[in-house]
Length: 412
Image (cartoon, rainbow, N blue to C red; front, top):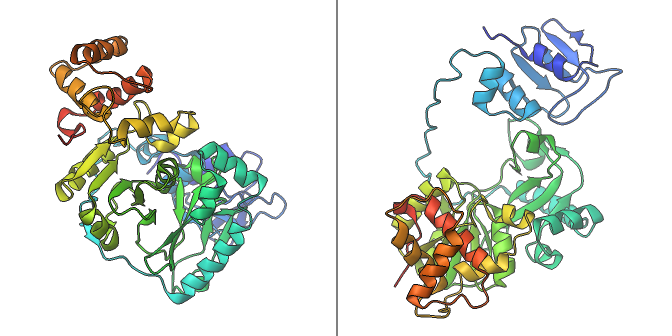
């Protein structure tokens, strides 16, 4: 038995609520931490079992146990939630989650296509959301994410102005429960026949989903297609997130096609895999985390022409770089310009050569890294031209903080 129940935690979080008897097995509360439902007068939509082990919101349909409640209400990880409720084995390392057979971006899968009824509903919802794309709230959000409005329109994005609740029967689905689609940026996915086959929402930062570390919400019944933008067949970049793919497409001005797999363990669909096999240049935009490292190893084994591209040191992905007001053009020049700068090496090859020169020493202090880079550049006769030294140093930090065997592989 746990030291705390949902009832204990709910009353700490909402002391203004008086729980009322509801039928024989439940208490009724006035506030739902998931959808924001609030009715202090009547308050009979959010239900908690009297043993404190389960909850259910009759307004948005969400339900679960005490761990799921803490993830939603306080944004905790599973392990932190276990500590809160006094689970005695919480400090025991959790076993690594088993990956699906198709996990890893080297694998491929035949994409599933939603039903015609699902597509009709999704097309109409997207049409309505596109009408709000130039609204003040959406424009402010796009500006913060670094996405120009004309690029958002080119990618056929939309803006969901408030939470909506979608019943499975509206999508032609049997069974399941009502889904809450949160307010935020709507990111549609189209297949090669230009059919709308997927919808995901990038939650706004202050949404309860974001507090629970849920950044994206895919509409139930969406197909398994990758997000793709751009028509370039010779140069293709693969990203984890859809926002990163849009940003890269924008800054590269169509010089590279972008594919988003929508998750570190998600597979490429067959259409994306065919494009990559035929591409002269392939780039893998890895997130700066362990999952990105593992996925790159799988990807490189299937697409030997692929080159690893890292966010600048200290940033997880392109989105974080933009929010920190990093000029992505410097990052583009560091990673995607195939010209040589100031000497016989490309800029990324210079970074690899520098990493090789110091790999015998594992650097833990980067305080004099810029001086080391400048000395190395002078020794090999290399000039940075218009690229700031601090931008080169940030890129090299990313290379040095990855394991040696996973550092960018540069073609001669």
